[in-house]
Length: 287
Picture 1: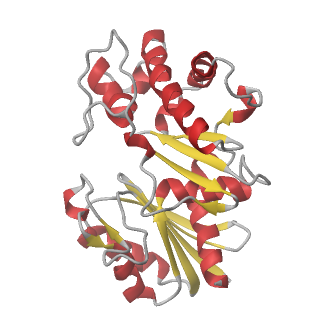
Picture 2 (picture 1 turned 90 degrees about the vertical axis):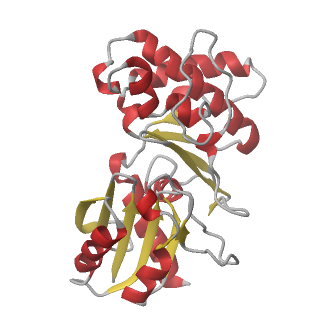
């Protein structure tokens, strides 16, 4: 049985065909330009296979509430060409197979819960720190969803007393994403993160903000495992800094496993999202 998977990111679309065990048979990567340019390439890729279902994880915000008239739409995204684009409906028209539609971070959480670092656990949190910051959660084996999907990258955090940078988020300025995502690092320090590896003050400040966010997520959701991915988290020194600052912030209030086992990189590496999309496709094929 062939399953289709799409990880639709703000920079690139990853498309794959795989099986119900999460094995990838073929995959491609396409630049995220405009719907008129990108979608036909996506469709052409899947036309080579007789897929039974399709799992899609998309950049957002998107509407994943099936009771809403805008279900399946990319909504108020800063990527103007994709704003109010009927993503689910476009794919449904092309393929006419069951389609699971969710956020890119939610499907990454699903992938890690099924085959990755949180395999065998009932809950986990997946956080990506890259071009943006987002998080998806699996709770009691199910993706966390309410009126819509969580937007954990846009929570407010306490500003560091020595940080005068106004923030990069076009909506909230100094929310978590505005202060700690990759573009904020570059705007604040004048270089991309990978060029700042040896500047300790950069990563001390980054950990200061990320640890605050983790404290809030832990106190509200109490996940059994926290997985942190994305380009910024390629700076492996960040994990130890985050562990240290989080421990200081929690101050013994809650009991957690050893933080080096509790807050970890993705077990699936850069394949968390596309693998999670295959898991979602499998769920749709069985529903």
